[in-house]
Image (cartoon, rainbow, N blue to C red):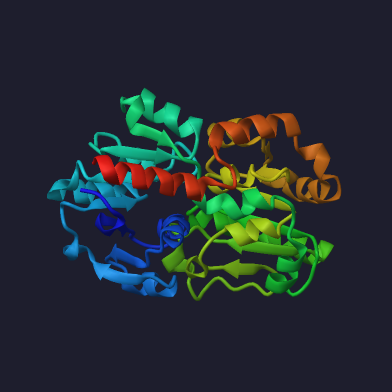
Length: 321
C-alpha cells in the first residue's frame, strides 16, 4: 500500500485536531474522520463519519483514547500517532498496552519514555511538534498580533489553568486583581479537555480577564503575544519553553515533572501576585536561559521544521506499512 490516498486523519475534538491541522495543511488534506462534526467544521475541515474508515488505511491521530477504540475494532497494526508535548499526558498514558505500529513523538523526552515503557526503539520516531512551528520560527513577542487580538499592546499574562473547576475558582480572584491593579492584559485559556468547561460555559464571565473558550482553537497565538505564562498541570508550560519568557507554575495539583522539565518558578497563591509582577518587570531574573535551552532541546526536536519532518516520516511509513 502506498500513496497519500491511503492516509486518513482521525480526530475527536479540540483536544487533538489542532495538533493535526498543520500536518494536514502541508499535505493538502482537508478531510478528517470524526464523530464531532461541529468541531471539524469550525476548524475548516471536512468531517467524515468514523464508520467510513477502512482497515486497510493508514491512520494518523494523536489521542490515545481514540487509538484504543480503533485498536479494539481491528485497526491495531495500521495506526501511528502524533502526541502532545508532555510525556505524562493522556495520549501517552492511554497508549500503555496498545500495539501501534509506529509512534511519532515530539523529542527525546517522549522517545525515552516510550522505550522505557517497552516500545521498540525503531518504532518510536522523533519528528518534532508541528503545532508549535509558528512559535519556534518567531519566539519573541509578536506586538502586532497582540494589538490585533487584545486591542492594545499592554503587558500580557497568559493564564492556562488545568482542567479542574476548583483550580480556576481558587485563582481567578487574584488574577482579576492583578489585571485591575497593574493595568495589564490577563488571558484565561481554559483547557479544551477540562472537566470544568460544561460547568463554566455561559457562567464564567469577567470584564477584566479575557476568557478564551475551547472553541477558540489553539494556544499558540496566545503564547506569541504573552510576556509570561501562569499554568499548572498542563502541557502548555512545555510548549512555552520554546520562548525564553518566564513560566510560573502555580498548581493546585502539583506535578514535579512540570518544574523539572520547563525551568519554571513554582509559587503558592500567597506569592503569585508578587512573582507575576516581578517577572513582568525583570523577566531575566526568572529564567535560567542555559537550563531552559537544555530542557527545550530534550522536549522538542526540529524546532520550526517539525511539520515538514512529520510529513516526511508519514510518507515514508505509508510506503512500508
